Each structure stands twice: as structure tokens, then as C-alpha cells.
Image (cartoon, rainbow, N blue to C red; front, side, top):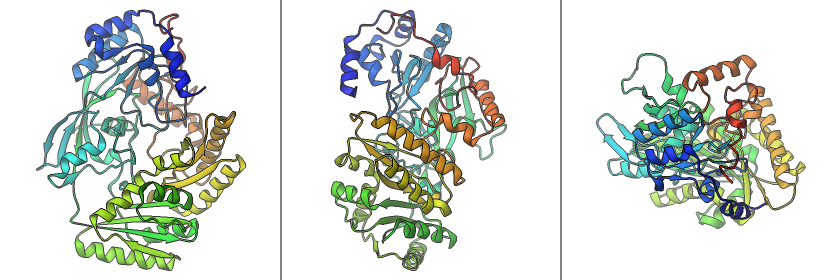
Length: 492
């Protein structure tokens, strides 16, 4: 059934009053605790292809104290909670299971403090990623992690998934840019983990919390490291007659001791879609294009750009274009970062994968991905962070076609298996969520999973924080919470 039909059905159902909702409303206000069918339906989904969500009351706190109150009320009622940002997740991490309270952090969106001298900014979790960089830009700084969804995704969501982005090849993912976190634990206690000191004392709980996908608590304030804009930037677009040649060029550049700020590859199908969408001047006759960016002092950028040109031609590049202006550079990046939106010209739905493989295996894995797509009769487009081997194959489909979603999931499972067999891992930046949890025991041993569960349990002894995510069934203390039935009649 389509999204619109599901929404209409949800609107038609009436909800029965619930003491849990009454207590939440008393703590916040009636307009910031929504339990109507429309709001619950809209907050039962994210940007993934998974449709298992079932939200309880949706809360919109505006302060740490209000998040505390929500957590304490949920504990009193024995109810689970799920934190949510912009809902751009692609692995189902924010999809509520078992009708928990959804804590939407979008109203906590203030940039609280910017300390240029110490290169630190304190922000609330609902701050949009790109808004932070735009705010810092007037002083010549930016926030380095730059997911493709940075125009809409939030810093809190970046923390939850340890998000990456094209420029994380040189700068590192979110974990490398977060110094401290104020978090509300599932029992309502507030804790500050990490610190502004270069070497905070004790265990690195900050590193454990980042990437935990909301299973250990909710972030309410974040101290991020801000990065000075480079004095010079060089952007090159290399064209190739084969994807293998593009992949080999990536390995050759790294082997030469050059670590660009970003290295992104797109195949011909996605390049054509992007060019039609943006008009950036991408060569649509190339089998693959490689977008490379180098940063630093002017002379150093010129030297590295020249070396990359030479390496590109040695590996069979059919053409190399160097951006001559900031406008040209921005247009090239606009094409890359709107790639996912561009495919709407071809199909209404897509399933985006996120595995990581060794750079040396890129070409072989991509060929196998193509074979999987052909086996299931699907169109696949490849656009990925080539520098760190983070693949993003897009499987295009129309969910209205009977049996199509099952084909897509089957193809996705094979792609994960191929990546693991190549020595890869399940996720580079999107997280595990619902999508990959069933495959965790293919990557980790039972002992590994047991230790991960113990860590989670230390933060959340009642296992009420985002239950049913990350750890596979049988290895998670939250299995029972995720499967709990909603009290009969409450949600219609």
C-alpha cells in the first residue's frame, strides 16, 4: 500500500487517552506532545525503505530539562523512547518499534557558543549541519563532516550515526570533531561525557556514545571542533573509459603518498542523471568520473594537483578538468551532493547501501554489485566515497510493483555478503539500524556482540532506549522491549 494510502488510514483512526500522554503533556505543553494519528504516522518513518515503524506520542522538547522530564516519565510508565532528528537516516535507525515515545529534537536548534580562539562551538542537536558551517563561514571556519544530506541533516543525527561525508577522507568522521557531549541517560540523569581538555581523564565514553544510534541516551548539547578554511583549494574532475580505471587511480593516488580532502567516484548512469539535473558540465560519455579535491597552501595545492593529473593519465584518464573558479568548484560539488535527488528522473524509489571495502577491492566488488542488480532485474547506480572505499550503490525501483521490495532487500543482502567476503564492514556512515542488524553476527563473534550488549546495558539497564536496533536478535537486552505490544485501544 502506498505512503499516501497509509497516511489516510492513519488519519481515520481515533486514539484513546493514555496516562503516559497525559503526564508528558503536563511536563511540556499540549502543542508539543502530539499523539494524533497523522503525527504518529509521519514520525514512524525515516528516509529508508523500511516500513515497520509504529510511533507512540511525539514530543518536541526545547531544553535539556524537558528531555529529562520525558525520560523520567517514560521510566515511570515502563515505556521506551526513540530520539529523532531530521529523519534523513537510511538504515532505519530512527524508526520507532513497539510504539515508544518519539523525542523529536528539531526545536533544540540553537548555536549556543562559538569560541574562535579555542576552535570550539557548542550547539544543540537540532542544528542543521550546513547551517553550522554557514554560521562559521563569516569567521573563516567550518564544520568538517559533510554528509550528502548536510542541507537537512542535524548535528545530533551526525553524532548518533558517526556520520561521514566526502571530505572525511582527510578530516575524519564525526567522532574526530566532537570533544564533549551533554547527554540525558534513560533514567533522566544528565551527564557530560568527554571534555575540552586535550586528554580527558577516564574511559573514552564519548567515543562509545558517538555512533550508538540513540541506544544509550539522548544528546542535548554538543561541543564540536571547528576547522579553519584552507588557504587554497584545487578541484579536479577526471574522466575514464571504465570504472576499473577510476578505482585504480584512487589507489594509485593514495599509494603515491597523497591524501586528498576528498575523492568521489560516479558511474555513467548517475553522471548522466546529475548532469541533467544540475548542468555542471559533467562528461556524460565517460564510463566513470573521479572528483578529487586537494587543500592547503597555494604552492602545495598546485603541486599535488599536478601529481594527480599525471597519475590520472598514467592510469588511463580520457580527460581531466580543473575548476577555474569557486563557482565552478561549487557547481561540481552541487552535482555530487544532489546525486541522490537526481535519480528521481529515472525511478520513484531507491535503496542506498553503505558498506565499506578495501580500496584494492573496489573494482572487483563493483563488478559483482552489477551482477547482483542484473540477477534481480534492478537498475544500479554507483556513487561513492572512493578514498576510503565507502560504497553507495543505489538500487532503483518502483515500490508499487508487486514483489519489488522483496527483490530489493534480497539484492541488498547479497551486496552486504559480497562486501564482507572482500574484507569489508557493514557501514561506513549510515549506521546499522534495522537494515544491517541481522548481518552483525557475520561480522562479529558472539563474544563481540555480548560485549557490545554489556556496554549498552551499562548506559540503559532497562533497555528502553531505541529498542530493536543495531544488535541482532538474541544478543540485545532490548529484544523484549522492541516486541512489546501497545496497550490495547490506545493507538486505534
